[in-house]
Length: 465
Ligand SMILES: [Zn+2]
Image 1: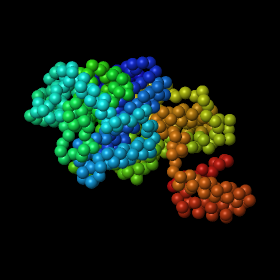
Image 2: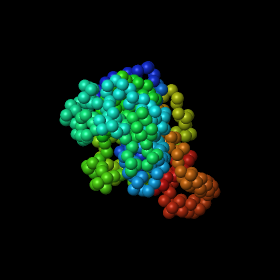
Image 3: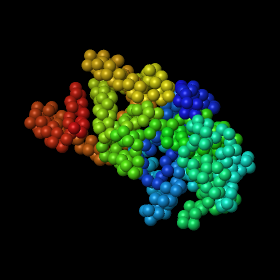
Image 4: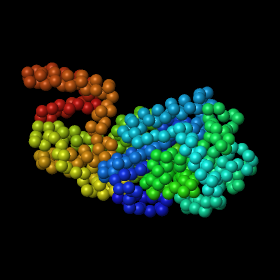
């Protein structure tokens, strides 16, 4: 299998550090507000990667952190007259609910930055000891990474420190590029937002959080580090510098998911064009949203427009329609049960092994759906059953299989199903008794309520029209 490593800028053969085990660290959200489409896409990209690596037989450990303290969290809490920690936790719960709704599997662990202050302080002390960090020149509790001491600084994004954007000079640091590892407590910030340390009271810089948590859970050398493309610089550049300067080998592969634009524009608070999870879930089912977000290659820019969800719904509907039809038409044949000897098609596997090429893998699914429908048309039942099983296996890997979603159906849907099934049974009895007036009345009644019936040989299926 090949993975595009953004550090080397090329597709590389993926070889885990220890065979059969894969460790992935993904930068999770800063929880100052609720999830937008970019957060969902990022978490989903790594979910699909973890599912595929698991399918290949690996034991995957995926660690996705929560940044629960930072300037934005503190600012937002002041605006909302709330404790920063309860604001962060409330948003963390909302993120988790959105992720669960999208069928994103819970990571192996989800460490919070505030729970790992000792590990961060230890890493900072190591950097000072090795001559790669220094205490603020003005005697405050700030501690900075000494970029001049680390000649590899800039290696992730291939930049020389002089060309880097967004560096602010200040009197207490040696160079503008030097970034904070520990930030002195500010008098206007709440007491709960700082911790005692040998450098003085303060809180961690953002970058050191991920360096410390990644090595704490995955070791000083692990397989894959992921995150959104917007995190490459400065966040990941700085993580890499800190960890390698501390003597860690750190990540063997760097993976970055592409960003989401909205009608061709960058999503930003000032433009007011952010698309939140609630906007998506109001327009389409969570299963459709998942299909949509995973249908573009994870590295490409995903341009969101409201119409794309109905296209995704139609595409997903073709796949699910085939499975439903095959289920119905094969129910009373000797092909009613799935054949456990059927494997995932090789074409699908080779697309997934090519840097998780989900759009090409979905094309394989659609091709089998088309030919599976023809098999059903022509009564080639064995072939149709085989395609039903292959499509199901592929959907399982992508987290889109019907069985994975049925368990998530709302209690409203389940209640509706039991009522409709009772009416279908009553209609069957009326038809058996040749009471077609009653049978038609039941069908019309359901139709007026927006429920359509489709009769097959032995079964009646219902759907919302
Ligand atoms: Zn991070």
